[in-house]
Length: 242
Ligand SMILES: O=C(O)[C@H](O)[C@@H](O)[C@H](O)[C@H](O)COP(=O)(O)O
Image 1 (cartoon, protein in one colour):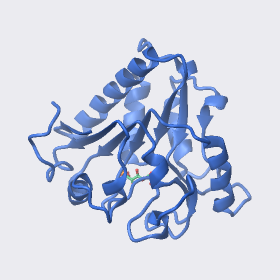
Image 2: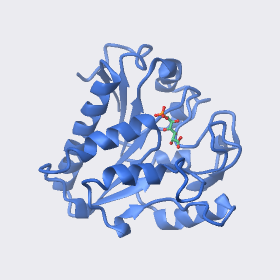
Image 3: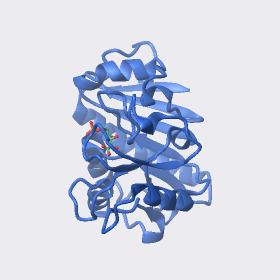
């Protein structure tokens, strides 16, 4: 079930998504005794949302002992490299979200190792058959999600759940990524889409363009297309949820 959530500006989107994400996580925790699994994405838009989310934790009712953080992709760089997704995200969320190391599943960094495939296999073992309750994804102007790129080996059919990605069109070149089937195992996929430069890719992906990773990744129960006015310019207006 695809739903469009349209916000006027990127700022409205950031604050609105942070509130809806917090509410949904609290709602999911109320339906189960297990941990809730949230898969995070890198990118500018996501990091702005994480910052707004961190401001909401106090008084939210979120049980931080029952949330597990995963990553959809990672740049295969040293831990201290500013390009590393987990570094940014944890610095932002750790301001208010006390998530234990056992519940924080960051992909390994390239500290003294060069083999991203081996690191991908290690993450696949840690992931096992975990199904994410919510998987957050940004999208590039080329329709990439996580580190799965169109017209690129990363987008080829695979039985792997996690892969090493080389020659990434988006720097840095070496990455680790969940694969399309793994992303689509998620119960809910939330696409976080802001900026006019994404409008064409967003429209094509929403229409299910099979040549774009964003065109084929969907949640099993729900797919949210969260757009600001600019990024959603090419989306149908009759399907807005609010
Ligand atoms: O590691 C990465 O680069 C991200 O996972 C990538 O998939 C990102 O989400 C998109 O490129 C959108 O990035 P922006 O939100 O910065 O446009």
